[in-house]
Length: 269
Image (cartoon, rainbow, N blue to C red):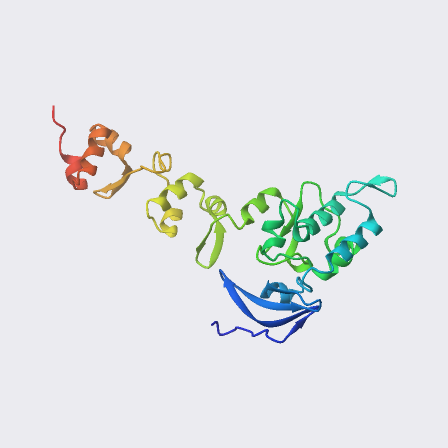
């Protein structure tokens, strides 16, 4: 158990009382809670501490009904005009967190992602905290394990959102964690080059710091890199250097020849 672990058992967060620790999911600590309505569920500890989870969801119909009455439906006219993109972003957020019939619910509400009580209370609060939605941007959570709240949300581009998805694998070097596309920009190397090097067993540091070689990364699965006499090149590069057919070099390497023997032995007539 981490040295900075805080036991939340017995604490009350809004309508929720923590009754004990639940099985962790990845590196996130989860807790079993009981709502004042009697419902028991599991909630991520970060959502409790940030105020993202304040009830089991029993009040969502009340909140949504209240919101629709005050602000109108997302596709209806409000004060003689269509609902703003900011308002639609707010209703979409509520839908994917609380509407079990929404297509995105399994990835949001279904895995414990909630909306803070302030934003559940009214669209006005959401607008005051986030401002109008800038053109071309959409609502993004900075930490995908946490819920929707002023501290965890921003308006972001589709590119930023794509890189922040939990399905996007992250790599850590020198204490900094980025996705492969971001490391590619930092290193000035093509994404395919870095990816190919990692598949061949290179360390991340080596993959990001060594200069690109001819045809490096073009053959992702079968690229062979040979180093001899201080020179590193691909199999096809060595074929050009030695005048030995690339298929001949490939057969030699596959047969277990040493690099020196494979590159220096003249081919048979």
